[in-house]
Image (cartoon, rainbow over the protein chains, first blue to last red):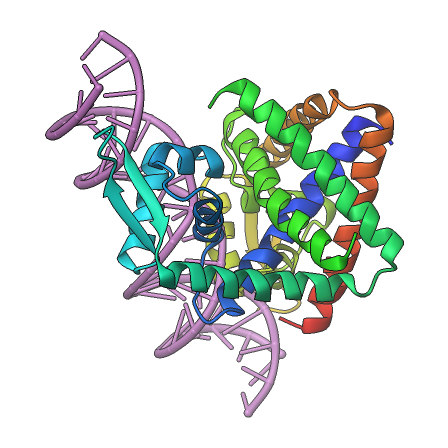
Length: 149
Length: 149
DNA sequence: TATTGTTATACTCTATAACTATA
DNA sequence: TATAGTTATAGAGTATAACAATA
């Protein structure tokens, strides 16, 4: 398979998968979360106290966009936002108890749904998908960070 | 790798890849296209005369959403929309000359960019990604169509 | 001056609900 | 009645530009 053919497959498949995930994230859990909201919560679960810039970097969006997304999460009581006392330009973002709970619920139910879809495949094919995903993520992360957005 | 682990990888990778594609689609070509707009043009290139319902099905969205997306493409002169004379409830959608041209440009430049990102990998890994994508697309298409949206 | 973050503006995607026109 | 499509409304993502506060 040529790189171009592979690129075509990525362009065909990724939007389909994205829609699948988005729909599950919205409908499945008790709390509706958009994909960027979910990913923000995931980051804050891993790095409590992250700044807005770190969120923007993780989401791959501008700070203005990340600021709006974070503001919505703060407004819904899922994230706590306070000024970093050591560096007063920064904000320190953390999950609230509610945010941590909703994150776990949404994560579990979405993982569950995706895993159920995969249950139609033999374990071998599941492993191939996983491997392909890992490779793709790695190469895109490298390329994206070398651009410098 | 368990199905759950694979699901996690899909959930991590797909949004990253989606953002990459979206950005290239917006910035790279002469004409900015959103991902749904691009995918609509791709469908009409393959099935000239498709109805709105076919577009909605292909995009995986409601007819209302597809109607808006199509209206934008018609407004920009990329798509021609006319009533099907045999079945006056339906519309027949086709690419205009301009639409066909822009589709080719956007497709080539996006494929090119994705392929360039893949050039960091050995051919073997590119093949693994392609295979993973094909398997994922197939399983999601099956699951989605058996839901019946 | 440079960096962090916010706000205003504008555009797109998306769904639901209510509608029109056709079958 | 049922189907194809549109429109109104509302909410979210996204970028750019202009801005305030801090370093």
